[in-house]
Amino acid sequence: SIEDVIADALCSAALRDGSAQPPSELSFARALVATGTRDELVEMLVAAGLVEGIGTRLWRGLCALTQQAAATGSELHEKFVQDGGAFTLAYGGLDAFFSGLEGLIGPPSALLFDAMEREHVESADSTTLFCTTNYGVETTSRFEWLFVTDPSADLSRLGLASWPVERLLAQSSDPAVRACQRKPKHMDEFEPARRKINQSLANLNEPQLCAEEATAARMYTGPCFVKYNAVLRGHAAGAPKQAVERMAELCHGNNYVTTIHAVNSSIVKMGKVMAAQKVYRGVSGGVLPDEFWTPNEFNVRGGVEMGFMSTTASKEVAMAYAGSHKKAAVVFEIQMGMLDRGANLSWISQYPHEQEILFAPLTGCEVVNTRVENTILVVEVRLNVNLSALTIEQVVAKMQRSHLELVDLLASNFKFAGAPKKAYEQLELLHAKRSKQDPNWFNMAANYSAATAVALSTQDEIFTILGDRETWEEEAGAETPRGDAHLAAAQVAERMIKVSELLSSAGEQDEAISLLELYMERAAACTPLSPPKRTLSYRSSPSFDAAPEDSSDVLADDVCDRFGVAQNERWRVAAAAKFIEDGALVPWPATIAALIAR
Image (tube, rainbow, N blue to C red; front, side):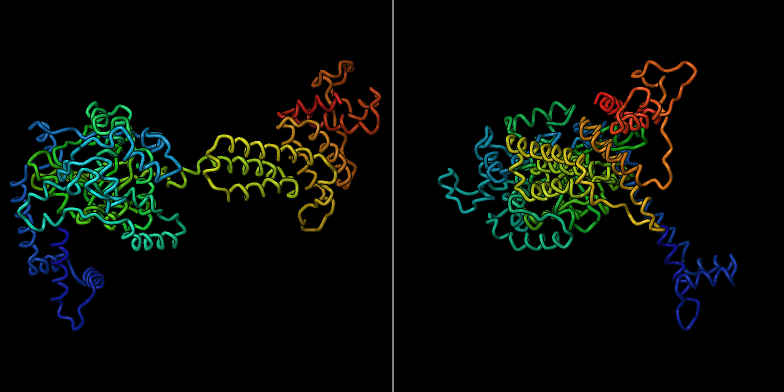
């Protein structure tokens, strides 16, 4: 670049300074500004050959420009479109990104291996031949499953003379190309590498890669990737007709749901130990859709890749693939980041020479810049990996997680209202117990219903004991700066009123009233001076219709005397007066009615 040419000239000038010890770039620049002049700088740069260097660099650029198919990315794109014969790449919108994988294809089975085997061996498309475009492998889903899970299978019983071969590689005259054909391997051979990855994950306190996920990842690197991606792209909202037809042709209604989830989960896990780097994705014969050229209402260009996105660390490989058919050629240049990382599948790939780095489905692709290199459109892209993507354990444990969230919510309601810990500790013990259960247990409707019933029953038991005097007897307020006993007692009284509000909100009026009685006792006892009398407005309470016209407020004690309220029941009127004076906000109206009625 021009910047490099200038930097080289400055370094050359610094070395010509004549000092015994060559200065650092920074000290040289500072000294030049402090003691030199602009003319001296120009003289140094001319002597260092800056003009010649810039001229050479510009000449190379001009020569390259005349040899390129177009000057800019948009110009080359228009050329691709006008030449015809190119398909338009299809991308989804933000609705697809936020709905997640489960929203697109549904949930997986908890029995991973059995479900994946059924999807490949016992489904409508299992014995239907299909052919890959990259290597020309003609095969079936059943053959591919056995190639990965049982590579020593008796081929004669399958009606095969050999495993399906890569016709385009086998016919090459180049021995190096023929050597790239896949070889059958037992999954056991990959165990040392899997253990190493799991150790790295364990160091990060991340869930480890299970054997089923490794199997799914190896399956993806073979011919079946075309089926998995056909499902993902064919299920997209507003998917092109060709994508829907391609899915139907390849899969016959088999959506490979559990396999796709397992591949996705393997990427989520392995991506945690992937070093961030620049990767490339070559596309041959496709052109970008309009949303990659025209900013939307949020000034963003790009879309959401619905399928898995294969990339390579080798720019040369991506450029060669994109330009291999003399059609429209696009290469995506992607810089991975702190969160937006793919998974390196080279260790388990059927084609390790590809050095494949795979990104999960529903990855956002935002255009940063475009440029032209010869006849290839290079698109600089910023990725947004779908952070709602879940590991297989998280997907399977969704029902368990929802139950634990319920139990945690119930316990938190009591905790933050200020209930005594001994009252709600049964919910905490229940949470600990349920978190240790097999997640699959909760996926049975009857089990989930029974667990929910136990949680709600435990809550009802807590409601009952919160109105008991014994529950609160050992409660003491927090330490106060001066150790004022009445302030500490006041803190407990305030907790009582909050818990009473919780009980009232839950419709537990008997328990709420019982606790209110304790609150009134505690509030009276903890106040150092005589508590002010609460006032009750006749106009605000339709229960009293004999109010004198010349008075709007009457002391609560006067009300009790007027209506002959027994001494041991007068706290009810005082409590009702308090709530009415404070505005009788929800949930207190029901409690006020219950107080008076009782």
